[in-house]
Amino acid sequence: MDEIIDSGISIPDGASKDDILLEKLNKWLRESEDSVSEIEYRKRSKISYDAYADRPDTQEILDKLAEQSRPPNVFNEIKPKVNMLVGMGAQLRQTPKMVPVEVTDEAVTELMNNTYKFYRTKLKVNRTEMECFEHTIKGGRAYQWYYVDTENPFSPKLKSQRVAGRDVYVDPNSVEYDMSDAWYVMRQKWLKVDEVQAFWPQFNPTEIEGFSKVSSTYTPTYFLSLPDLYRVIECWYRVVIKYKWFISPITGKPDKVKASEWPIFVKKLKEGIKIPDQKTGEIRTIQLDEPPEAIERMVKEVRYAIFSSNVLLEQGDDPIGKGVFPVVQYGAYKDEDNNTWDSVIKAMIDPQNGLDTVLRQLIHLLQVSPKPILMAEIGQIINEQAYREDSSSPNFILDLAQGALTGNKVRFSDQPAISPVYTALIDVFKQTMKDVSGVQDSLLGIQTTSREPGVTVQLRQQSALAVLYSLFSNFRESRVQGANILMSFIQKYVPDNTMIRIEGSTELTQLTAESGNSIRDTEFDIVVDEEMENSTIRLATAKMLTEIEQARPGSIPPDIITSYLPLPLTAKMQIREYNDAKAQQDQERFDQQIEMEKLKITSKTKQTKK
Image 1: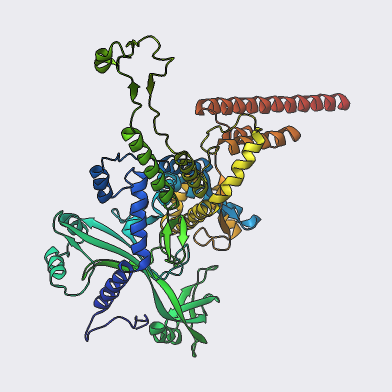
Image 2: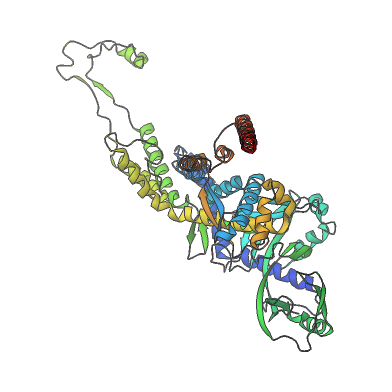
């Protein structure tokens, strides 16, 4: 067996490969569910989501507030700041772009760019990215999952979706942002038995229920009896395979063969392998008496498995062959000690709780604070009975005996003053939330002063954004990683004729073939970067093309310039028709001039002969 088995897994005698795999998958799930990183993440993310949704208090706190007749008001300062950060991410409009490594790679790069943008729009990748970013801010992490829908096996469809952070389990020993060092990543889904059996008819719900009941040790939950749901786990994992590396006598390039298949390969080489010549098409035989020199190495490969408890539903190899998980992780702020992700909200929870506490106390004091008491000597209030009954009326007039005011015989008691420390605490809590979130008043559009120059305000806003560098840097890295994964799926599953149809012509495909670059292997031809994709960039491109046309008339066709302008299609068609008609008239005029010149030459020739 070429695969290296985990020594921590107990394998009974006579166990099959599927049994070994199931034991390994369940061990990983138990390990991840019990890990500090996953436990802490779920606890913190729930608190963060509750704080955003105006539910910062537990039921115990609400009961105590009710016992003390205290108001349970929530003064949510978190929600507008979170919404502002989400809006900032949307305003950036950063779109991944394929960049050629050198000039000869421009054709394949443009072909891949056009195809990538088509599928990015078709799969609504931009919306999925923004949903992941939004839940990253709110909960700490989110995941973007790429997969292939094989409902029609002859025309597989690429798909992309967001998976909530609470539904994903990652190798607790993984520390890399792109999960390149993770041995596994899992996602869970709770389904009805009919849904599971529709895709995997071999699924036996009775077996799952019985296994959950009789287990004496801790095992992950796979069945919920009340809603009658079954837990299905999709796991992407890495295995270590023993390979033989050698210089292929067929291609002359480095190649590898599994160690267990090496004797078979050597035997075929001795017998002779017939292959067609790429240039002439003739069949030639590659035969070696001695096997090529080989070096043994361990290689990591990606595989997937879908299971529920002790039932293996499906398994397979890496669908794109790149050795990476088809999963993109979106993270906010990393807690290195616990190896988990924190949301933007987490740092604002304590000041928000302090603000709620202070304002609740202030409201309570205003409600129970004694009102000013009217103090008067007997006989100084003439309409005393009317005062008792109707003093709250806005038109009430209090009649006093003559000299009552001057003699200081009637006055109100002083109302107890509320300490100014409440105002100071409120300001501290609000400013703390602004500082830790990076969302100051100016970023929210709140005017704080009218005398400060606009340039100064802009510079201060840019300085404040430095607090958000880690957040937006992670967002950018996730988008670039997602672009690489989607490009790999396109290269694997999108045929050439589909690319040509997306592009609209075969010109780029021909240029790609002539350059010697393959659209299926662009490792050394294309680098994924980002650009600001919006109408301003297109208008700037149109302006540059217009300037080139003005400097060198006739160098830029009008159709190229109009393609970058936001004109209606009918207007572009009218311009194209006008240019075609004008070009035809110019050609006819040129032909007429040629005919006139020919007639003149003929006439002069005849006169010369005479």
